[in-house]
Amino acid sequence: MEVIYKSTRNDNEKVTASQAILKGLAENGGLFVPNSIPVLDVDLNDLAKMNYQEVAYEVMSRMLTDFTEEELKYCINSAYDKKFDREEIAPLVKKGDAHYLELFHGSTIAFKDMALSILPYLLVTSAKKNKVENDIVILTATSGDTGKAALAGFADVPGTRIIVFYPKNGVSPIQEKQMITQKGDNTSVVGIIGNFDDAQTGVKNMFNNKELAKEMEAKGFQFSSANSINIGRLVPQMVYYVYAYTRLIANGEIQAGDRINVVVPTGNFGNILAAYYAKEMGLPIGRFICASNENKVLYDFFETGVYDKNRDFILTSSPSMDILISSNLERLIYRIAGDDAAKNAELMKELNETGKYEITEDMAKKLSEFYGNYATEKETAATIKKIYESDSYIMDTHTAVAATVYDKYVSETGDKTPTVIASTASPYKFTRSVMEAIDTRYASQSDFDLVDELQKLSGVSIPQAIEDIRSAEVLHKTVCDKSDMEKTVRTILGL
Ligand SMILES: *Cc1c(COP(=O)(O)O)cnc(C)c1O
Image (cartoon, rainbow, N blue to C red; front, side, top):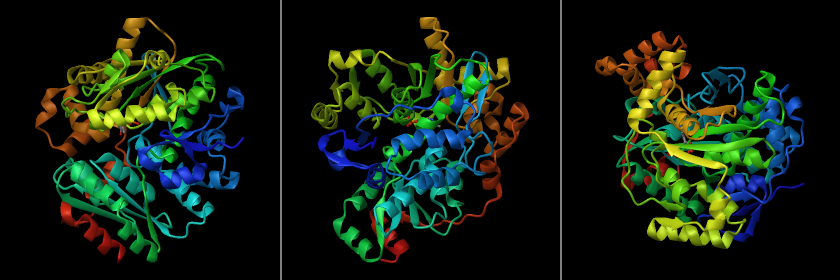
């Protein structure tokens, strides 16, 4: 059965999977959603015998139905290879009473790699299928993590160029070094004099600039987006939930058909939505435990049915979850509205105009599988220290938010269902916060000294991504004013 993707804001806008990947966003700000989610009609016990790539094929082939077997296998095998430092790609590690699904073994040591290592291949294949002959130019504004993962994913992928803008004085030294040392003939990294919002606005303006699009077309280029609302990022994320479940079977922890719970440290709601889609496909998941940091918009939403972004933005030690508009929540709202695009569009209009909306009681009833809670900065640090001391396992700050919320969930409910916690970043990516959580005496040491200390404490070898930037040569030195972003793009592309 063919899966068609339609807009969350307009029933008449329908495209194939490959077209949805190429377009990224639907018209008028809508997101593409599958018209129905096919059943994963493979025996879970059989999946338990497959490796990551094989499971990926079973899941993705059901969602991306206009890709041929050959195309999809090419994308999967090109993405999930030696770039990952573990053969299992996403190892499942049991510590205490939880199973940590480590999603950070890719080239930039955060879970964004799970989707951004395959998106370039999906995009190029989609371009070919739709007879797009232009080179695809990915424009991205980043506050740190997404930019590096996108760069690593698109570097040297034929038929693509990638240009990343970051706020010159608005990212951490390690994040900046990761980006400006990026190799690949098709990569450009530009620091702007301005903040992240300026970078984001500049990129949006270029996407909407018809004149620029025309000149690009004449030179054989067109823009696309590696943004997290692209369905080409969501579908690959469904895979690791199925994979985790089947590893639990293989390890004798559960039997096929048993329920599990998942805990997901959440920002833009992409990761947890992928788990929800996996359940719709037939994976036996009981509760979706949505963990927030002090930016607890989602917790409040699950408690009250009111989504309200009118509040202070708090900078936390889990910056990838510092977010007040969780874009992918729209896909869930659409679903609980009964796939009603008009109703969803109305709520999103309210969000846009007033910064808040309230769902109906009927809609709220359909959220019973979700549990939301949050962790304060103090609790997050305490969890890192506690689990280090009890299990000699060192987790990053984002994962620690999830582990904290999991504890709260268990003490509130007594629910002992086997649970998978999505572990979204390597502790080496947030070394300072992690080490200071373990002992405040580390506060006086330099970032790279702390890397060595972390290695000593954890016994986990330093990831290549960190070794690489210690000595790597700076390759990108362009800095421009926020008003000159378009000019810079023209120079890079030779327009
Ligand atoms: C992006 C990110 C998250 C949040 O994931 P969403 O899909 O946006 O909810 C959590 N942890 C880390 C380390 C991330 O990079």
